[in-house]
Length: 393
Image (cartoon, rainbow, N blue to C red):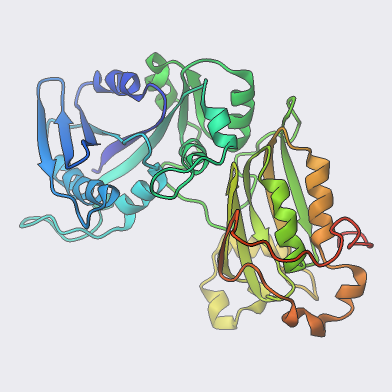
């Protein structure tokens, strides 16, 4: 039987939460801290604690923590006195890549162990994120950067979005409204003393370490689409492609007063490619997410995800196949109507749709990977608001 693992992340009073979890019999707590020179690993139970300095792997703190943790989890699994492992992540460490590594990164422990991922011996029972109610929302809407190039918003939004349970330091209406739409499957509570109750009543469809796929439903967990003051979840969809340059100019609308944007893009100059867009606060990036099903060969289709094929079949177009635009924006202060108008204006006009031979020649400011804000904005080809004369198809 695999040993359950609970990962604790966030910027709030995580130590209080870990202390509550540590009170359960058979729980061991693993911590890593960096003192500026070395990473120190701490393993503690109710009876004892041990510290061990670690040499930096490739000069990378995150790599050092990951490599040590994966081996340590497999070793702790062998101890008969351990029934649960609590991993207290450093404040700016995101739980999603750690969970992926536990389930997928092959490690060699030593004699008596079969080489393989830590997931052979442990299972992710839950990710618990502590939310500092006083600071989380301003951080989630901002564009401050960390020393490693990530944005603060990217980290705090990712920590909350990936959680199975969210523990707020204080009740805050706006923060709760955002979190209920950002992580609708997560169990929410206020105060560290209720974390065990939250873990005992997790939703059946909660993540438990599973990452999203770009082709998964964008509204998993059925978040509310009703606005709550300045907070709301906007959905945009279309069955015609974007003009790449007009879309690039319109993306500024997603960088102010928006907590999170996620979705699939269809660019006219990349007729067969799916592009993924994701933003957190003032930072945004796009990346290549494979081919549309309609552009795949029969052998490629055979390996496509069955759920994706089923969802596509329900809305299949005889001419376009499954090609579409679909994205969501979790706004907190931004005007949804302005975003919709800007995105609609970035779609191909009826006149442009009638000249598909010109699409491959459109200048592409995205490439396979793109991040905003970028150093140079491309020249805006025409007026965004007036470029689209027809209705969305």
